[in-house]
Length: 69
Image 1 (cartoon, rainbow, N blue to C red):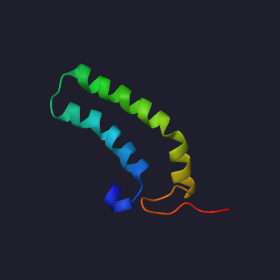
Image 2: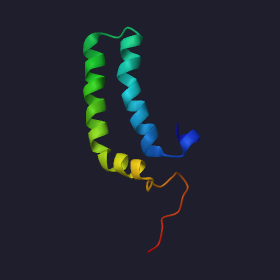
Image 3: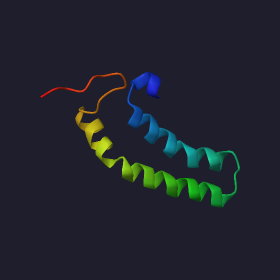
């Protein structure tokens, strides 16, 4: 995801949301999938500012220099 979009925060969000789905599809015990889902919720919650910046188009891409005021 990072290679395609160059957004590290987007790649992190996609990876953490995919983990519980993968755990469930691969047959891991239910408690492992639930723990992964709870962890994903926490990670997405912690990335809420990044999500707002991604939606508004102001999130910096990997390798992009910081804008000077």
